[in-house]
Image (cartoon, rainbow, N blue to C red):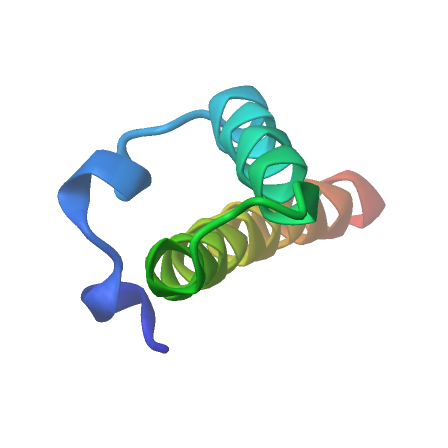
Length: 73
């Protein structure tokens, strides 16, 4: 899933907010009484949140790399 496919409500989340939502979904999915139909939607949401977190990390890596290059000059 590309970053463009991530819904705006996910893109607006901070790393902490995304991580908290992931934990909530995982706790819900670990419940044996969870509905399978709802689990599929929860899984899709997990993928979106994971991709968002990945994009945040990639952005931060670029920033750190840029700063490191400037310091080395």
